[in-house]
Image 1 (cartoon, rainbow, N blue to C red):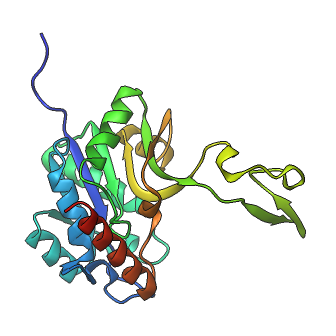
Image 2 (cartoon, helix red, strand yellow):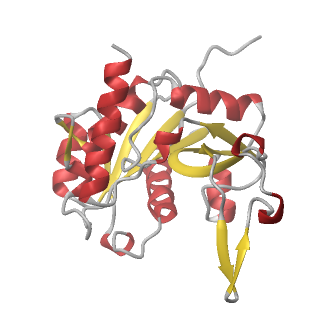
Length: 235
């Protein structure tokens, strides 16, 4: 008999209060809404996600998150400074839900609110791809069409092509940049590796502008313009 019970999937959105580049960055206004609200609404729209949780140390972020429909888990100060990893916040949230509610999701969708450019359905498609490929973790990526160089031990070196036989851009082997927008993983991956990625990996390809990340005032303006352009294109 096929079970009609939907496996539990939680979207976790870490959002610290401290930000040196932009004070209160995660609740800076973008297209008339706090930045984090866009990611919360995208997660709530997903038919695959059954709960949306923001993990934060900040009262204002917590209040905004609740206003836009998310649950909130308060993050301890010990894992809220500039050196704290996102993984520590994710682990804390999962352990708290398990201890207090006996809630253990099949999948975790980790969304960074500083990477808010996602199409309607992207989260569902990412989850579906992980399941179809029977992967353990998935990361979203954007196409890379650039010639990459590095300086290794003081020597300039072409990384993704041979500069002596320069190809046309369209002839480069497909390459991708991790864009930080969507991660999906099975909880045991985080527990075993202390990392959002592990086991069998899958890639979810998004458009190039999805790689925009808010870190400065300029980034905030850029993200707003791209989101506005997308909105106008689809209306």
